[in-house]
Image (cartoon, rainbow, N blue to C red; front, side, top):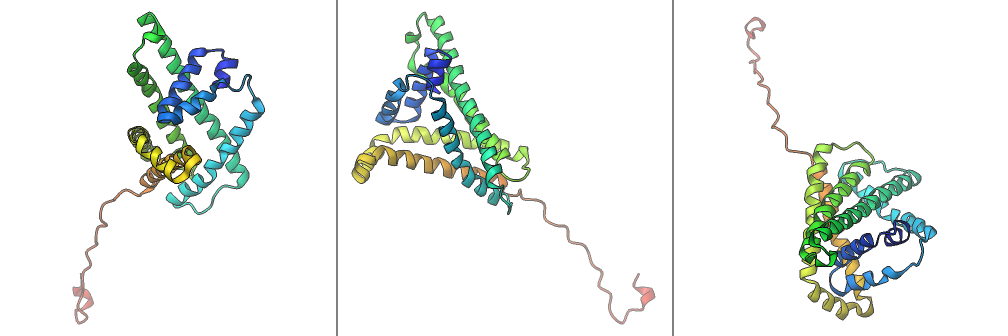
Length: 246
């Protein structure tokens, strides 16, 4: 996305918005390390982008199985159909993410004109602008995943509120990781040494996936319906004449 914003759109504000989002999403030195790679590549590598999109499909195959089990669907899609749908979801979610960055860049430029200089915009205002755009995009991406990925038709009215709650829960998880980052990274360095940052990403991904799966289980759970009405049964004694039974 950074290479597209830099070399295709030629929009430096969009690159800065992506860099800001990376530093906001990944806490502490982890975000700084990832953002430092934004000087690469020096041109758009379309083959690398396609390979990245194709390998990202792998997340949706086990997720489809989990969502199918949550909704009680016993038959999964074939591998080819899953890959086609997963690739479409990757493009949709990637477009939503890129749109959030571009909208953040537009808002940043607008605020810069109001303040007279983009660098004069307070950081808390930039974060607020980014969150106002990023959170709805995350919720929409979750909704599309809950709606399109199961191999059955799911009711929209049941997954829409779940997508909202899960999107907010992921935001809470992100800021909890920021608050606990110093303790987490010390623990990771103690246990994993040079693999501390990789282990922390895996940990955050695991927790986020559990929240997403919990939302799927919640949306698939059948609502409590009314108790069945018991029919009254008239017991007729055996020695009662047939004419008196009425």
